[in-house]
Image 1 (cartoon, rainbow over the protein chains, first blue to last red):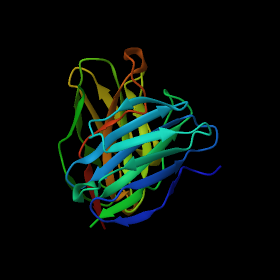
Image 2: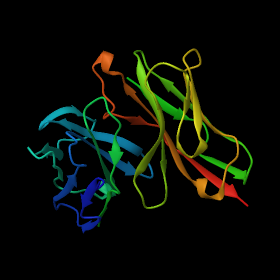
Image 3: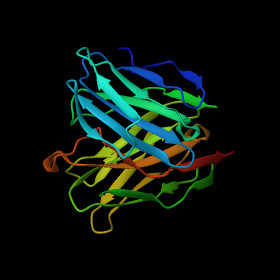
Image 4: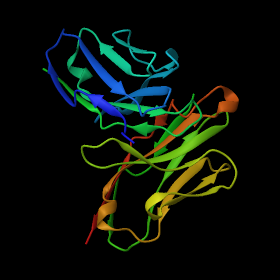
Length: 112
Length: 118
C-alpha cells in the first residue's frame, strides 16, 4: 500500500511569490493534516481536513490556506512568501478523525 | 490550551544502555498522548500512543511509555538502545474525541535528539 505522497519534495521560491504544495493521502484515508517544521518553532499544526471540510486551523496568518478535494487529496497555499516561511511542510493522513496519522516525507520550502 | 514540554533537547547515551526521554504536558481536558520518531530527512513515524486504558503503553522498536496523570507526564523508555535508535523524538498531545478533539490536531514538544554512541 502506497504511503502518503507529497509533491514537490523540494522547492525554492523568492519573497513575495506564492506556492502550492500537494499531498496525496493513503488510499481510503479521509482526514489530512498539515504541519510546519522549523528549527526555531519546531512542529506546528497548520490545518486539519476531513471530507473536504476544514475542521481545525492553527495559529497562522491568513496567507496560509488549504483545501481538500473529493478524492481526499489536499493542497496548501502560501501567498506573499516571507523568509520565515522557509520550512519543512509535513502532511499526514488518517482513516478518520480518531485514527492514527501517517506522515509523508515532507516538502522542503526555501524562500530566498 | 494544551502544551508539551520535552525537558531534554539532547540525550547522549552509549549503545546497550537504557534511556528515558522525558515529556510533560498541560491540559485542562482529557488528552491523547503520542511519541513520534524522525530520522534525518524523513517524515514522522509513530512509536506509540496512549488513548485510554492501561497506562503502560508498548510501542515499536522496543520502546514503551507510561502515562502518569497526577504528574502529567508521558516519559519514553527503552531498556537497551542501539546505534539505529539515533534520531529525534517528539512527544505530542491532542484533545480527546470526548472533548471535540481528534488525533489529527497535534501539539508537539520541541523534540529530543537521541545520540547513541558505540
